[in-house]
Image (cartoon, rainbow, N blue to C red; front, side, top):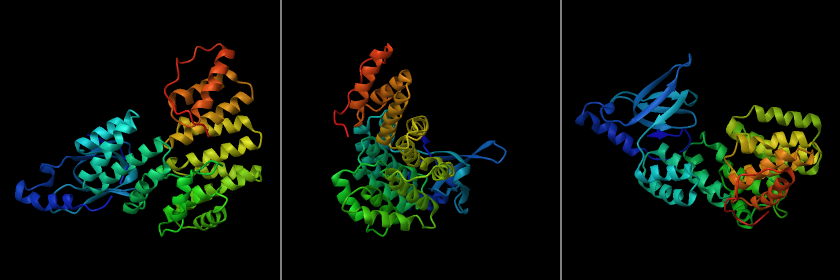
Length: 366
């Protein structure tokens, strides 16, 4: 079965136990191992490695090919795919999540986490649980599972799932309550998440900005860049960002790994909007729904705001399409109600037939 190269935990007793008893059974780990790693060579050709995956982190994959041999290590950037066997609950959870049915995916994944003892597969399950939480805009549920991933693998490939706040609105009261604890934790990632949700909280914004400025000087590049982009939110709202500064922001986003770009694009798009540059704002915001949609609620908001920008410079047909994208692709997000109103209004004006009736959605708007 295929393993999506995306997810992490701790304690690999089963793997080592298999390695130790293998000589007594068949004389070779590979005689019964189910794992397969597809690697890419410098010339572009691919080749498989069979054995037991000892670990799969943001840095590398380690594979035990034969009992008694040292683990073979391969850089993560050379890994095309890792194939392994999942438990029945894990497989069902992955299938439901792929269909967007998080209500069914979450209990299956929760059971899978209890059954699984391989560290790297547990991280995969935790990452899918984070995706379930982000699907519902539940940052409170996403944070502990994401922090568990980072604790197990500080260089995790799932850093793009960090449940950070990126809008200029105050976070939910329950999230703010927990965020005040997160910013005091030893974990720098917990501090980053907490500070992001407190940045526009009247009681804690000074503390949050202080934490972010400190994190923006950290040696960990991903932590440093995410903290810097969080501070852009303050510059964006204040309206003081200069054209040269925005060029530096664009360059900084382009230099990031792709999984970390969504928040930066959102803040940059918001800044262009505030500076009355609707074309650039729309083009920038559309990166989220088109490419970087791991935070589904943020992607929906970006799509809605891009539609507003497109409508503002007169392209009503394209604006209608973008509003319908929110209605049908993100029907249960807070902006879906407003998008539906705009879509119905513009659809009548432009004579578009639309895609039918909107899917079920929540009626609450932010």
